[in-house]
Length: 259
Image (cartoon, rainbow, N blue to C red; front, side, top):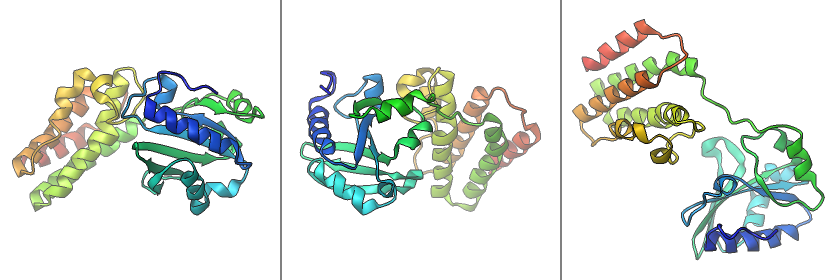
């Protein structure tokens, strides 16, 4: 496949080399690209998200075997298994020079039946990848709004308790968690986008940027308390289609106010 001209130079050169190498590996059934490649929004700072479909199911769990493949794709600086996001099939790699970050997800063809996006097929000599993609639609999960409502006030109480105890780093960490897992996703959904947390939120939820910026404060007790209250205010403005836990809300907000 000839790579599109809108792919930035460094990423295009890496992809061209990687695809040639992968096409020579008999274990590789096909290759597809996800992320910003799908939306044609790649720029010089973009990662390369590759889905590498393999015939050998052991490659999904054999980290060293996958790292061996990763080393053949370019000048690998370092790489690691993405346990931090609960995706052991994914190897996150940094290549260079020039520096290019590539996320390599190793799957078998059946895994394509459960996917969050429809990747762009780059290499599929036997049509296996295309055949699997035609079997079903991609589904990107949305947050459970009621679960968030039930949990949110416990998180606010937790923040307030940490402020009272003087555990300010932990309190800041919970406010950051609320940004990434609750407020960011709800804000991007309000803007008609997928629930992507903080990713490109400046573009996807521009009317919420000022409110979100109030969550990021210096290491100061009063400032952290105010950031937690800002999280409360923003959440309430984003909250829809839930059974409001008003008693929990009142109790948690008062506990925070008294902190």
